[in-house]
Length: 64
Image (cartoon, rainbow, N blue to C red):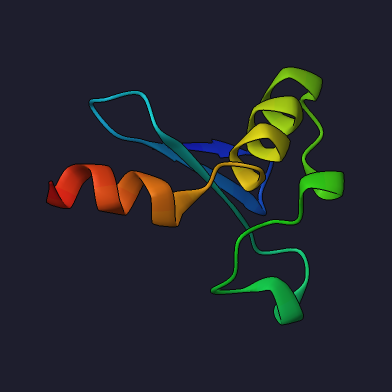
């Protein structure tokens, strides 16, 4: 985990997945930071691509 400034916390798991938590806006606490608010362009592109993944398809593959 690492702080960016005083109001953004980044947590990374051992598999490389990172979560960004913003404490700037009380309305965003407990929710995923919207892609347009992610300042790092590469990370924003990654999250945008994740939004297009068909999770139902992957769930069916894992179950089989």
